[in-house]
Amino acid sequence: MQGFIIVATVIAVIVAYSIYSTFHGRRKRVDKLRRCFGKIPTQKYDETDMESIACYWQERSHAEKLPFAVDDTTWGDLDMDAVFARVNNTCSSVGEEYLYGALHETQFNGEKLAQREQLIRYLDAHDEERLRLQTSLDRLGKVGFNGLCGFLYH
Image (cartoon, rainbow, N blue to C red):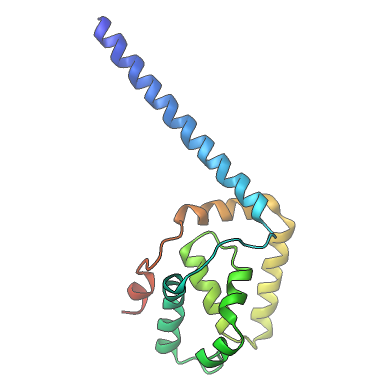
């Protein structure tokens, strides 16, 4: 009987610690997301990071033959990797790849631009909704060469 009590106590402690760690870790991530919103990103990128992030755009631009896009020469001349690093406050690898592609793709469709602006204004004005979305995306994490672009295009 005494062995059962010891085992039950150990299991209860493990479960309680697991619940506490999960809650505490989640709260720390949300606090970080709150602090970082609207701030200049501090992450530094090396050549390998940029190759990984660029993978989605390269695959998409070759597959879809987009007529209006910033080509690699112009991108380099404008030092757009530095612009990307300055504005990239994304929470996931997928978000980084999408932002990189969005900076390459010129958009002339007024309706799409208006929808984008409406979404930006909504998320800027609704902190809790933005934090829920960011928290979900943050769970995806940032992993270099995650293979998503290869999966989508091959």
